[in-house]
Length: 515
Image (cartoon, rainbow, N blue to C red; front, side, top):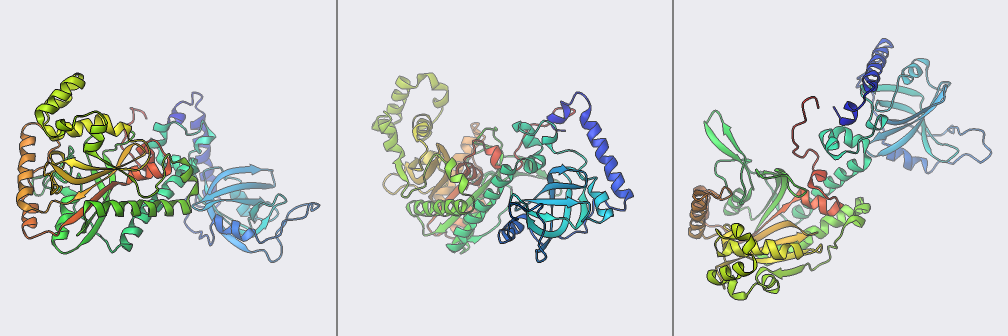
């Protein structure tokens, strides 16, 4: 029950619900099903609004607006969101997926049985009407109801009937109510749908094949994160909900599918924040014969395409962004960025020099870095010094330590670093990509290092996927791979501050008893 319902000390909500149930019973007594499915609309609200633009508005001296003899007749259906009754006549607003349309109900026009059913209507109910389209004296497009169908009797009032629905936790817990009470929330998720469609549109147009790979994994892998563990009873087998689809998608490169992508759910057993939800949507694509550099170019093209498609349909979201997707995006080398931030170049190549620097400048955080190897210390410094200073504009950070990139190809000039980039937009990580490691012996060595790290207590370390190594031994073409958080992309392009607003049903704490 929403908090606004529970906070009603007078018992008014219970009376409202009882009254609505009584009206449902009266509908049944009139021979009208309170939960019917026998009405078929032939137009949407937006269709009627467009059609009405061609109709003449009544003159200023007209006593009343009436449909003309040639007025088009339409059947529309939706939820009642407003109702003003004047005894023998009423105006109401219906919401459908395209927008809102006004309906006029008159006792002298509607059949007596239909008018009796109409008198039991309230905001929140779903109804259908049929009649001619006309414009009122104020010019508003309106359907004059000649027939009335009661489709669903809402047994609870809409939230604005009581205190409204504005508290974030209440909205998320009762997302169904949130969606019909707040049209801007519906519009946000329509925009999300357009974003996902545009992602597919671009990749399909670039000859990528959309695929589906397993969500249940026998081995923890694909990214560094704590997994969710489940159990298959028939096989008596512990399994992991996938952290990332990467290792299965790269098997497809071995099999000759040279360009593949997947948009799907991934799971990471981590905390909740404005940027993290344990269940999230990931786009990953893999392209044979691509490099880290060519994937950067494709990333710019992909995001420009998605933003363009979104802005064509939902231009209001462009004004909310704190950044511009103008190509080329800024490029920062991680080593160069650290050096500009005051880290000596020698510290990036020598563990003793790094320790000396950390003791002088970050002794207070010794617990965070003391047990890390050189590569992980470099990455810790990046997250500490550089990432907070990136600003809102799109920025590629390139070249990452091999120690934090076990699936990426080492650089030819310095194997301590890999050909990898992360894209930051709006001050947060949006995408991660690299030239893929296709040397099976080196990959096996990296996996063994991950297993050892797990033995030492690193719960995010990957397992040793021997079947994946076997696939690499058959030969995988050189390739570039890319991963993007779809929920974060929605946040950034639509200008919302929390990932929970970009996901229809984000994870929440259970409701309190009685909630």
